[in-house]
Length: 286
Image (cartoon, rainbow, N blue to C red; front, side):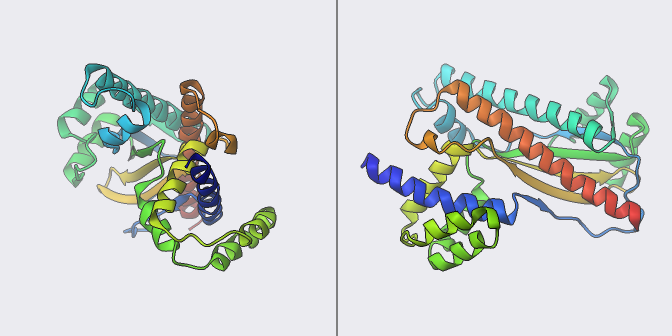
């Protein structure tokens, strides 16, 4: 059985890795602008993180699989995991915004109080024009960058249906994608010799393989202009750790897993900031 799992994992992980890295792990979803100069640089932004959008069951399976479901120890592990992940993401994003995008961050105790009072740190809170102006007055910022981790150490849920549907396509379709990039042409030839992906169970084995190999972390963010309260940009990026296929056939230590996650968070942050810079650059030229 373990031999089947290993072979299946390699078969599924390979096309999944190829497909998503070639198509790009970051997505940009800009909203319609009211004016071309709605986004201006230099920006001074408020940086607000909303709670991680990963359910406890997923985190427990990943970080406390051997502990009783609702034990204090299990809950402590999950709480510590979430706290560490969010602190890392916040620090990395603030550093990247300041150093890579040249954007200043506004922060203060009074601003933190208002953020809590208005529930700006809740992903479901819609920012009204009045709220935006209040934030602008207190912070001196002209934009709010709100973000959250939506997937942590596991393949983004939004990918699952796409890959399962992908099972019914021919192996030639996958090979064509890989062959389009010179760097993956050798892989394309090897993959062409394998069988097509036929069962949903195999696809889920592939998700497990991808999780073990490079610990995906997905972050989504939005930029809200405080003079209008409108969403000027929205994007997401999925980060990966280094790729080590040997992780499929050996036990990955907690230390190595945590290093993978740190690297994946940094990779996702870099993707978010790169997308944001593209949007800012585009509007500067218009």
